[in-house]
Length: 260
Image (cartoon, rainbow, N blue to C red):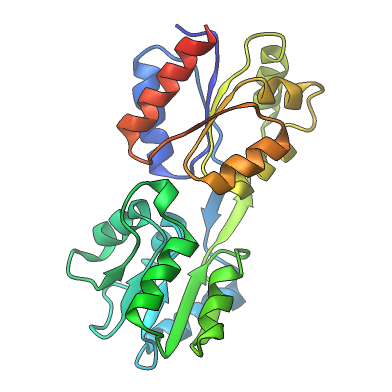
C-alpha cells in the first residue's frame, strides 16, 4: 500500500468510480470533490424552467460541463430538433449523449483535453456560422470569454444559472487526517479545473503547513490552463492526462512509483 495519499477532486459519480477502483487495489484515497452540485435557488430555478419551456427562438444551447448536463436534465427530457447542443470537450459530450441519446445535435471539439476547451469549441462555431440566439446554462460563475465571442459575431446571448457549485469544505475528521498526513509523504492530486485549484487551497488553509505539503506532491490535470494555475499555486510536479479513467489511473500509479 502506498504511503502517498491520492486526492481525487472531480465531482460526482466519476470521482467515486475511480476511487473505488484505486481503493480496491489497496491505495489510500481521499474523496475531495472540489464542488458539490445543487439546483439553484427558487428565483433562478424559475427563470431556467420558464426559459426552457419554449426554445423556439433558440438555435444553440451551450452546456459547458457534466454538472450543467445533470442540472438541465432535471428540466429537459428531450430537445427540439432545431436546437444544437454545444460543449467544450469529449467528456461532457459523452454525458450529453447518455442523458439525451445519440440523435441529439451536438457540436464539440474531438480529441484529448489539450485540444478541447472554449477556444477549440469556438473554432468549430466559426466554421459553422453564427447562431441567431445562444443559451448558456452553467453554474453561478464561469468564464465570460465564450459568451463574449458569440456577442462579437452578432449572436443574441442569454446566460442562466442552472446549478450552484458549493466549494469543498473539509470536515473536522478530514482536517485531522490532513494534519497527521503533513508529516508524511506528499500526495498525488487529480484536479481538473482552475476553480478546483482555488477551492483546494482555500479548503486546506486551517491546517498549518498543509499548502506546502500539497505542492510538494504531484498534480495530475487535463488542460494547460489548469497547469498554469497549479504552477501559480506552487506545484512543481505536474502531469497532463486525458480524461478517461484508465489513463488517469495509469498516470496516478506512475506518479506513485516515481515518488517512492
